Length: 330
Image 1 (tube, rainbow, N blue to C red):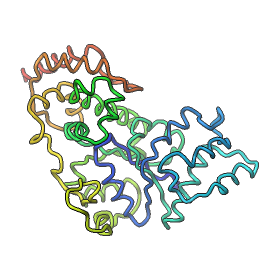
Image 2 (cartoon, rainbow, N blue to C red; image 1 turned 90 degrees about the horizontal axis):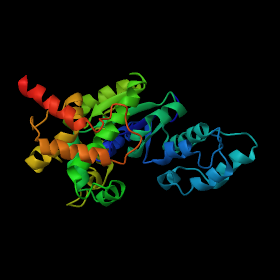
Image 3 (cartoon, helix red, strand yellow; image 1 turned 180 degrees about the horizontal axis):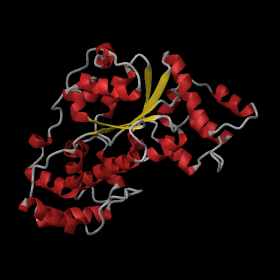
Image 4 (cartoon, helix red, strand yellow; image 1 turned 135 degrees about the horizontal axis):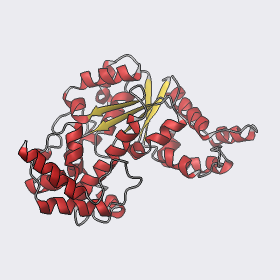
């Protein structure tokens, strides 16, 4: 087993922080949170040679790249790698940094949880072919409902032009884009590398879910994963689940009670096909033509790139109407 050992990814608001904390509580595994630039820096070759070798500029940049600065390395250690005169690849440098983190944590296996990497699984696999990729999936209607009320929703509005005028449909296409990209990449990697988990199983049957995950990771299950929250001080009232360090708790977000029927129809008109594929039953079996046409417009204007190969085209509204007719007749 080598580091990076595992990458935990998922669409934002899917519960990845909960899973990160549970895995990080395992006595053999340490998880570094939110290294969103890990793939993009390599893809753009920022501070790297065209061949992917590290330059002094990258090492200079590293100290300012967000939460990665929490890793236990000093500028002198990093500069020493270049001063030694040997070429260091980007993949080897990150492996070394993860290893250094593991030594401080006294854990032999080190991974990362980064929601921004859910659309970059191919790059991660190319850099570290032996790393495990764990994709946490949550019902998109709960994800969308959470994202709309998220304190960072203004950032999503800056990224996607239709967010303010059509938040539900835009959230649906945003969720579908990320989930499809990850599933598409994972399907080409095999069961030994890529693993899907459902958030709902994690919170309703946490021990069973963690045992299955440990089986995939090749480590023994440990009850510490379920008790990650016990080491935290008593939280103040009014905090959300993330900041209160709650244990796995079903029902924190429930679209069936908290989302209007009109919004459910708008969401399912966009992403109903993916809900079907993953096994989340639709609530509205018959979206109106207006909802389907609205969904097609939002999809056409969606700015997220790259797009999955299975991405619906401008004819998505026609296909959804045809699929609706088939469902109605069966």
